[in-house]
Length: 310
Image 1 (cartoon, rainbow, N blue to C red):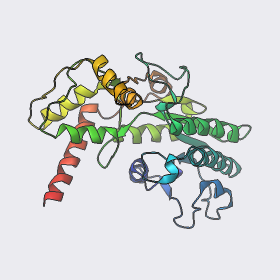
Image 2 (cartoon, one colour):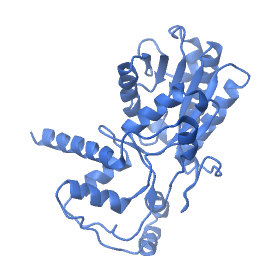
Image 3 (tube, rainbow, N blue to C red):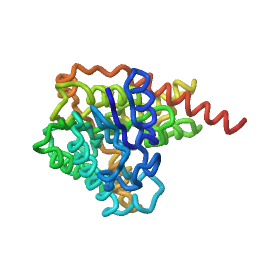
């Protein structure tokens, strides 16, 4: 296929470009301000370099508060980058006759909950970033309405893997410290998605006829708790887990007294998705287990630490 990938210089994007090219697809890697592309995707309609005969656009580019940019902390800037720009890109895709438009959203459009949820669950974005991504979903569907371009939305959980810098990477770094952690008691569970599985899911969303018109949650499979991830990481390092129990209500109380209740809930709240709809619609099975995905990330972090010492 002929595929355009936005956000091609990002963690998922650069790996997706290599993955697609490796399987024989003709890929246009679109990065902000590079190769004549506009700095602002809202101006994509005037880009003279739009490739001819595109089959699919995979839209990964986003403004994320995790990035160290002042604009990423501004709600209006998030809406402009993640909703208005998505609409402009989808409109341009429809005008050029692109067959499929795949939008990478986030499972954070759903609230924290103790029970697994699927795509029919209510949406209540957990933060301004998630609100802008949900608005991007709406903008995409509005832009494609009445056109021949099919839309597909994947609501991704945290994607981890070699080169990743998110919460999973931070937790694995903490696991390497020779200190006990208060995570032995049953705690919140989270759905995860390894980089390898994310690449396969996005590739399938780009081509599977049964994915057209759908909004899907996707994940590795069974959720993991913070304690399970730390224990696994330390086991792989040849160490004991060194976990102890501290009741979650005590942690919540401490967080509240410290004015960190929101951060506590983000860290210890459960967010477990049911991705049966995507598996049923496309026949998808994750090619990598969470264990193998975490092992690959641990090896990468270990090599980076050795490189810095060297």
